[in-house]
Image (tube, rainbow, N blue to C red; front, top):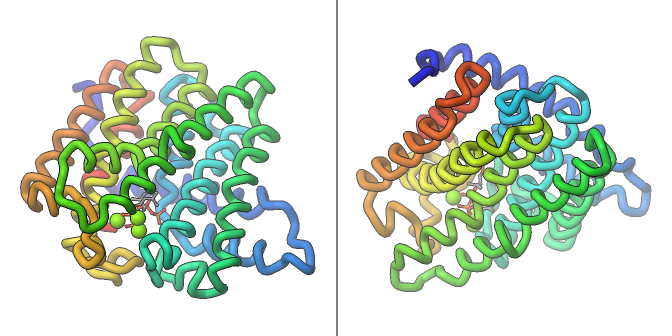
Amino acid sequence: MTHRPFDPASFKAAMAGLAQRIDECLPTLLPPAVAPAAVVHEAAVHALMAGGKRVRPMLVLLTCEAAGGDANSSAALAVACAWEFVHTYSLVHDDLPAMDNDELRRGQPTTWKKYDEATAILAGDALLTEAFAVVVRHAPTPEVGAALVRVLADGAGMRGMVAGQAADVAAEGQPPDADTLRFIHRHKTGALLQSAVRAGARLGGASDEKLTQLDEYGDSLGLAFQVVDDILDVTRSAEELGKTAGKDADQQKLTYPAVYGLDASRRMASDLIDRALAAVTLFGPSSSRLADMARFVLDRTH
Ligand code: IPE
Ligand code: IPE
Ligand code: MG
Ligand code: MG
Ligand code: MG
């Protein structure tokens, strides 16, 4: 493998720098609050700015860099933030009483709990819709903008996350089924992560050869991300996670630990990360941060 050894301290520092740029940019991309509807703006800011690892916008930027593009441009940063808008919307709606009925998110009360359900639904709607406006407004060219809109829609919509969320809710309390489980995880979580990688590839002007490899990276990393999320739900506390722990079992969710047990789930996550790492070896040093990100996804504690 051509990667330098994983240096968690150096990656952590690089991530913190990226997270700061992302955190500063996010609120500037929202339209201004308008008095009679100010609560929706406030709720969207609450959901967005409560914290969060910012993995999806980081993936956009790190992939753009790996593809040979300029990840430091303000256009790339804004486009990356659109992926965080969509991810945050998905969390706001995932936490609603009609879905996972959660009261804690990113160490704060969930948006519906702090405001009310209608406000949370609308704040999610706003974040999802504004994400597309951000992409169109900030893409480096109209052609790239149109391609990115398609990538985002495929990751978030009925070809992606929405399909996974629908299947996740339908599978509650149902007999375990490995194919359904894989479908749920690749769609509800994998699709948006993979689309973030695709967006970075498009922004960076990746060659066809790199695109194929990056797709393999995004697919494996995306599935691994949710397998690890399932493991953390079983093994970590609410304090560590910033969200309710142990709730997948309570809600009879179809998860990797429920179907395969913890040890096998860990091995599967590790194998998926190995595949993600193998997919980006041919890039050499420009993809070392993508490799670091893959190791982070496996080793993360929240
Ligand atoms: C949590 O995502 C929900 C999933 C899709 C697994 P993250 O673990 O990325 O949550 P934040 O953004 O850091 O809060
Ligand atoms: C997350 O799945 C999928 C989303 C699209 C938000 P979970 O329901 O497991 O996410 P957490 O554990 O609540 O963050
Ligand atoms: Mg859920
Ligand atoms: Mg949930
Ligand atoms: Mg979970």
